[in-house]
Amino acid sequence: MKILVMSDSHGNIQNMLTAVVSETPDMILHLGDHHTDCRELRQRFPEIPLRAVKGNCDRAGELETEEFICEYLRIMMVHGHRFNVKYSLDSLVTNAMYNEVDILLYGHTHVAHTQEFEGMYIINPGSVGASRATYCVLELDSGKVSYEIKSL
Image (cartoon, helix red, strand yellow):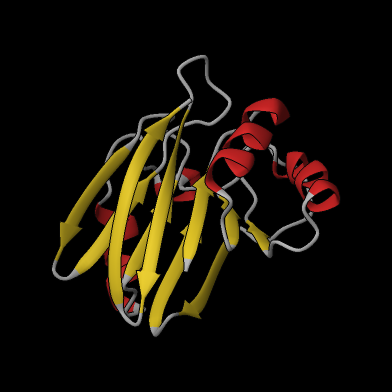
């Protein structure tokens, strides 16, 4: 399964549309800060499942954290502001480990970041809304994980 992971679109719907057309994903995940930008994606690509969480710039709508199973892996989506990710990942990673998460996806910092820790994949796709826009393509295949941060 090919998953397009984006965060911090901040109204830049065109960058989101470009990423979707370029990647043709099986699923889209948006990690907040203007989850309402997802309305356009849902209208243009109704056949692609889309999940979104609320960020610090979002007033209402989505949950702040979502966990689900995909291809035998537990995925946790969060914007990250409630975990102070701009200063440290400790609190977020501890929470994810407690919940036995396999893939931890977060945003908020606008800086792409990937690492593997204690068997957990930790990924921040950066900001799809920035002038130097980035996003992540996450590939899942029967429990196997691969990922790549891409620029627009």
